[in-house]
Image 1 (cartoon, rainbow, N blue to C red):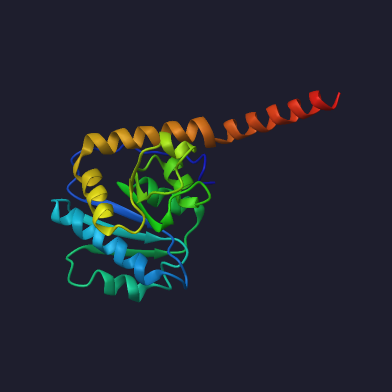
Image 2 (image 1 turned 60 degrees about the horizontal axis):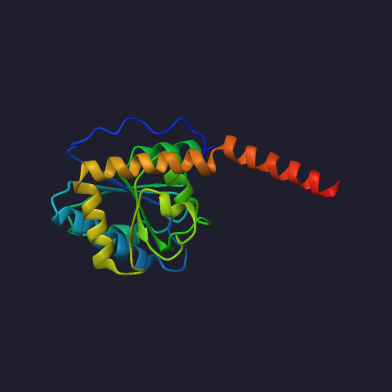
Length: 202
């Protein structure tokens, strides 16, 4: 349901609050590093002048609530933990966010977070390593070297304080979704493969 939902909504520039969405966290492996990465990046964006709110949604976010709270202690950053939700609710949450932050490893097309970001037209900030030769090369993503918190924070701060850049990334992700991942595109390619297979078998 996320892939062809009626997204994205209008994205007004100059909003006083910027929302970072984190879709799913590892459970039970890796939450301490992940929470440190998210918290560090959000603090960097705040230091750069962004008024930041971080929303956690999806698998693992409810069971890791105490670690999330601890990671943001005394940061002055508002945190919201939504936990497991329906695909429609997840889609609305991502689409309403200014950035989708992905820190579970390097971004690649096997991760649902990347596809959800495309579908919702949301700029993505993530770790590099899986983009070569994929539609990620055309997408609205800002990538940092794997597990480089300083670079990740700088990338997030840049996207959250530059409305023109965020809009450009937003439009790129809409384009990537339509070109590669819409149901119409998937169905068309499936039909082309079917016809090609029939021709070869004759």
